[in-house]
Image 1 (cartoon, rainbow, N blue to C red):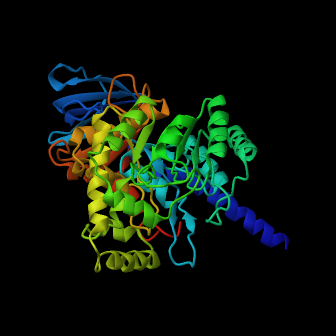
Image 2: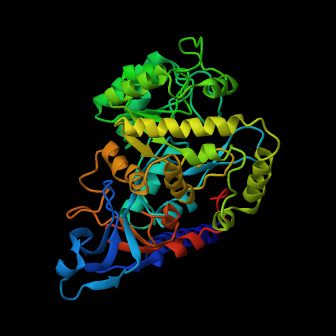
Image 3: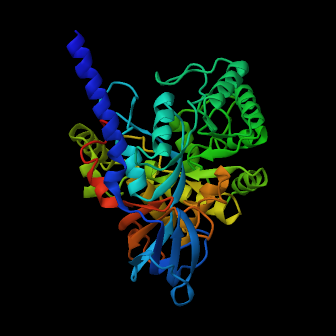
Length: 472
């Protein structure tokens, strides 16, 4: 028995040493001073891209940025000539998860992806993320601790606490909030344990939502929601800070909806199919949300997956899946693309229009991935698809990048530190081959991702998780 315990202790020690080496394996560039020269720069603020720029990084921060002919490069700097390439701000996306849906079970279930997802997020240019609800809260806290300590590769994590769901919870992995006092108690508990935002879920009634919002705001923290029993307008009146999934989750247009009643998905879809996007009630709701400073998170990839005629995932994404997860995805995709009545495609087009209308009205549109559904949306890869779909919705490429970077930083309150390429900010940025300001698909051609001035090899990170998604 003693020998077994000694061997176990040795394995634990070895694992700890390997974890310590994990990050360094993927570092491609680390130096006190780095100069990225002759680059095209998209700064994340929605302004036009600028050609032939030089960015000087010193001690993890952007020390200087300007035209290459006029920007001083300190002696001894590590220099990268980026002619023909583009530098973008590290993406700051706000509906991320450290889990993915597992479909090979009788009921809805998710598996934590503590190994693959942090790597994929970082590899795809996401340097800061807010999770959109926790299933394994202590795993999330431990991941954040290890990433912050530099022993694991991954983005800067802003953690949302376990879901605030009503009674009865339809998902066994979610705790049901019994009453307003229970809602406030849970907010206080998880705030004390390091979570910085809270998410109201589908069945939560107004009274519990109000209690959660009041408790969170007393901590100086924010509340978001994927809601349904409560309408968008009602939630805005209660003081919610953010609404998830664009207008896909809105029940405001369901005729005869009763207070605190969650309409069935069929009824919600029918209301969206009948909706006139130019109706006064639509303009009124958008105006009210803007007036109340309620942000809207666009999570288009998870909904695209259920629209017939949309593309199959790329080969690189399919390689990330475990074999059972890949097979499950392909079977479901084939069913989605079977005979249909065209309703899903019609609703899809309307939802794109509504997101653009919200953005054009001055609303704070932010972006997220939401790697759930039937597994068609993968961390990192799906995040880049979100940016592409914002362009499909009618935003320009630089506007879409702004939504996925600076706007997210604004909502988190960290825009002075991250979210755009400006002198004094953290050197969180990434390099792509091509020009996403002209062809947004070039955003996928990532070579190096910098977080706090340390360059990570994107292809190497992606290769390291082949066959893992769905398992770990």
